[in-house]
Length: 97
Image (cartoon, rainbow, N blue to C red):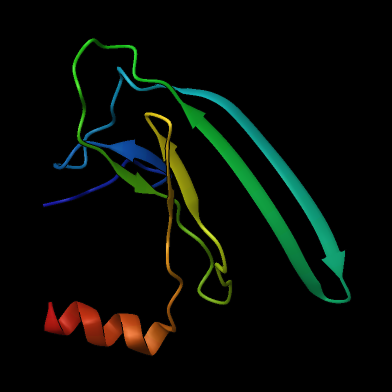
């Protein structure tokens, strides 16, 4: 069963164990306020220091009242862009799949 570490953020293996060979190398945060809404961009750079390929899970917990409208990752020079969905649609898909 997946059980992330205390703060819950970062890269884990399929069992929820911290990946020591893939440390966080860089982090930057940019925030802008638009009236009462914060637009926050976080950039986290991890580097696989082992010679082996590593299967990972990325965990980034957010507040229940927050929303993610864009997520992308670059892995081995391949850019992955996530498709954002409404919470009810995600809940439905999790039950069906």
